[in-house]
Structures are given as C-alpha cells and as structure tokens.
Amino acid sequence: MSKSNQRKSRIVDKTFKYIGLAFTVFALLVLAVLITDILIKGLTRINWSFFTNLPSRHAANSGILTALAGMLSLLFFTILIAIPIGILAGVYLQEYGTNNKFAKFIEINIANLAGVPSVIYGILGLTIFVRLFGLGNSLLAGAFTLALLILPIIIVATREAIRAVPGTLREASYGMGATKWQTTRRVVIPSALGGILTGIILSISRAVGETAPLLVIGALVYVPFIPEGPNDQFTTLPIQIFNWVSRPQAAFITNAAAGIIILLLITFILNGIAIYIRSKWYKNIKY
Amino acid sequence: MKGKIAVYLFILCFLSSCFKEYRGRINIDGSSSVYPITEAVAEEFRILNSDIRVTVGVSGTGGGFKKFSRGETDISNASRPIKDSEIEACKANNISFIEIPVAYDGLAVVVSPSNDFVDYLTVEELKKMWEPAAQRTINSWKQIRETFPDVPLRLYGAGTSSGTYDYFTEAIMGKAKSSRGDYTASEDDNVLVQGVSSDKGALGFFGLGYYAENKNKLKLVGIDAGKGIVFPTDSTVRTGFYAPLSRPEFIYVNSKSATNPVVQEFVKFYLENASYLVKEVGYVPLPDEVYLLSYQRFLNNKQGSLFANTSVVGADLVKLMTENQ
Image 1 (cartoon, chains in turn brown, purple):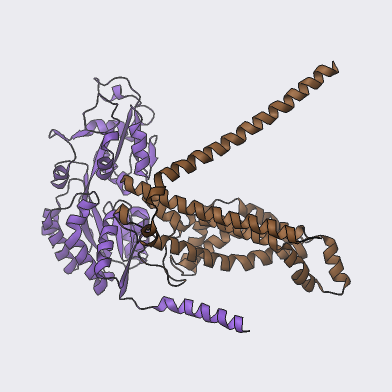
Image 2 (image 1 turned 180 degrees about the vertical axis):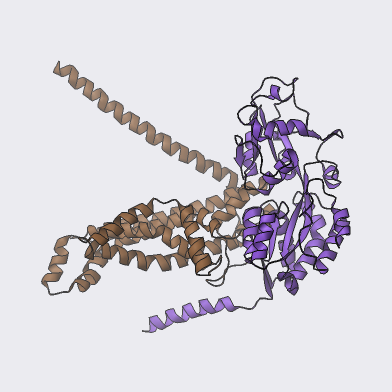
C-alpha cells in the first residue's frame, strides 16, 4: 500500500517537473521565433546611413537619427526628474514613515499607480504638463510624463534595497553617536545603492519602449531635426516604428523591423548593465 | 565647487541652445492619410529651406482639428472637410482658416482573392451590408444578392474616429458616422489587408494606396452607382467617375499663420509640387486647375469651408472653387 503511494507521488513529482519544463520551453520558443523573424526581416537594412538619415518618404533613405536623438534626450530629462523624487520618496517611506497612517496611505497609492495603464499617464500629462503648465508638446512635457510613469518602479526598488540593509548597521551607526540623517546618508543609502541603481535602470528600460503616453501628449512623427533644448519638439524610436508599420509599402515594414532590432538592443544593454551592477555590488559588500 | 560650476555651465549652455535662431517654424498635425503627402512636401521643402523647421504629427483628422482650434498648429491635415462643430470650436477661439484640397484618394472596396463570386457591388448592396439595421441580421452573402452563395459575410473597415470612416459612411449611407457596429475596425490599414486577404467571406474598404501595394493578396471590387461598373484607377478617381468613393484630402491653414511669410512660402511650395509628390506617395493628384484656383484662394485670403452647405460626396471642385474666388 505505502509502496504504491510512494510510486504515485514520484510520478506526480516527475510529471510536474516536465510540465514546468514544457511551458518554459514554449515561452522561450515564442521569444526565439519573434526575434528570429525580426532579425531576418530587418538585419540587412541596418547600415550606417540608417543611423544618420532623417525621416523620408523613400523607405530606403529613411533613417532614425532624429528618433534616436529624441529618445535619448527624452530619457536624459526623465532620469533627471525621476531619480531625486523617486529615491527621496523611497527613503522617506522606508526610513521615516514606517509607522504613520499618511505613509501607509501613500504606499497603497504607489502600488496602485504601478498598475495604471500608460495611456492614462499620457492623458494626465496632456492636461497638466502640456496644457496647464503650457509646456506644449516639448521634450520637457514628455519627460515629466514618463517620469511619473517610472516613479513607482524607482520608489519600490529603493524601498526594497533599503529594507535589505541589516538593522545592525544602523544600530552601529547610532551607537557611534550619528544622527538619523547621518546614518541614512552615510550608511543606509551607500549600502543600498546597488539595488537602487538596478531599479533605476530597469525603470529606464521600461520607459524606452513607451509610445502610447507620448502619442497622447502630442509627440510628433516627422521631426527633421535633433532636439537642441528641453523646449524642443521631438519624436522617439517607438513612434517612428509605429508609423512605419502602418505604411502601405513593404519596404517600410523592413525599416520597422530594423528599428525594432535597435530598440531591442538598447533594452538588452540596459538590462545587462542592471544585472552587472547587481552582481558586482553584492560581491563587494560583506555584512 | 569646481564640479558644481561646471554642471551649472553645462545646463546653461544646454538651455541657451533653444534660443538658436531659425527663420521660422511650421507646426502641422492631423490625419494619418494626408500625412505621407505633407511629409513628402516637408522633406522636399527642407532641402531648399533648411532654416525653416517643419514638423508633422499624426493625431487623426478629428484630433488635429482639436489642436488647430486651440491655435496650437499652423496647418491641419484632414481627410474630410471640417465639421460644423469644429468650425464652432475655431470661432470660439477666434481662429479662422483657409481650406485647401491637395489630393484625391479612392476608397477601394476589396475582397479576398479566394472569393470567386463577387465582381462588382452596387451602392445599394454596400448600404445593405453596412447600414445600422444590418447589425446582427445580415450575416451571409446570400442576403446581399440572390445569386451569391451562402458564405458568412465578415466586414473590415476603418475605426470610427478616422476621416476615412466618416467619408465612407456619408457616401454609402448618406449620413456620416452611421453604420453597423459589428465589424472588425482598425486604424492600421495593414491589419485590414491581412484580415481581408485570409478570409473568403471578408469584405473591407481602405485607401487605394494600400490596395496598390497588396494587389496579389486582394481582389478589387467594382462599384456600380447607376452608371455602370467602375473600378478605381488614377483616371476614374481624378475625374470623379469612381463615384461615390473618391474623396478629396485637405490641408487647413490658420489664417493668422497665413500672414507669416514662412507659411506662405510653404503653402506655395506645397501647391506647386503637390502634383508629382502626391503621385509618388500613392495618391491621385487633383487637376492642375484646382491647385491654381487653391493658390488664388489662398492669396485672396478666402476663409471658411466650401462644404459648409454642400456635401463633399460627388463635389465638383473646379466648379465650386471658381464660384467662390
């Protein structure tokens, strides 16, 4: 009796393992098919002029210079806005406001914000930054909107990283006579920096692919110049791809595939940096 | 300390760069069907005038007019004439405009190549398929014409916010925005092409340019509006013989912007070069006379819409414009 039971459990155990394996392989296969398809369609289109040309009605002469420049400047301002706010909010919630109702209220709202669809941020950005603040469809308006979008990710990552700092470190610091601010600044944040940076980079790699909120705030499609300041109009790579995909000529679809490869590459690089920082940081720190 | 000063200097340089001198800026937004034409014109214009910044967005005809009526854009692309409600919105903000037709586009009605029973459809039959009353009741080709087999009918068309949808419903149903709701709608015409090509019972409509690029995947349906079966071609669309599904595309110029020499230069360039650029991006150019008449109207600062009282469907542009100089 018990022997057959044992055999049964062992079979269940094995089956579960193989089912799990099958699903993992399936997910990876889908990804592989997608990537191969894009590579086959777009790889031959990538050459130097693809990076240096302006948008054009001729698919073969059309390039991503302004879209890439627009995207990088947009990310620059987004980071500039989101990092201080995100880190400070995370530090406050984790180090100072753990026990008051106000902080709990904020915490719930941040969790909710993380789940809001990105278009909604676009509508918010349109009303507040574009119209109310009168920023128009400028880089700054786009950066503020994207900053709002990635704030919850940075805040949550900051909190997680700070939570991982052992309490004994703090107590040691207090024991030496340090104030709370000194402890936070010199002990807690430096030890948590690895986790915080990882969170920031992951949030950037999310912002890279966003199209919907930018379209809502009025980002343009045909922009034949590189933005020269925060008040300039802009376009980004995902918008360029979106436009190419909807064109009737097949050659534009090839362009879109090439654009997607570049976008994927940027995301991979960002994620790679995040993983590198994480592993390096945790190797160096010994509590 | 030194580092801080360097950072401030950097930011200062960065901010000051946005005061760089340009001879002018022209903001354009609106319809995605007119976008390729305006993009082509802007691209050619830039070669001659690199110190004028022309930007083009794609918010759709309606979205474009919303920005236009707030005074945020100089020129609005539109694939249908401006509506009364949009004219009201412009008036409320003290904005007047000059209407300029720039091209013709034929709406192609297509079926799958595996569909071997449809060669042509009358406007009446199209109406029977698409009218609001057809919702959930007209489901088979047999209901459209007795000789058709009992194959399920599946419809594909532009989304309800597009100018293309507005025009199609006005031309077929006689009333803009009136159609059945149970059809596959997409703003991306390539999705419609995919859908129609793989489905024997499918019927769809979109701009002629998308048919021209996908001839091997689609079968064109002739339209009979009482004067025999007509297929959309450059000449039938240009002469208006492909009725009622050939439509004009427009740009609307803010008349305050029209006093700006930079915008004047751009509009002049647009109308001088539209003829060959329109063809290049897959649309049908207007008769040369219309471009001349349009430029005259622009110089005369002739404001308002030609289609405030007349329907755009089947309109004779030459006649309308000569009468309204």
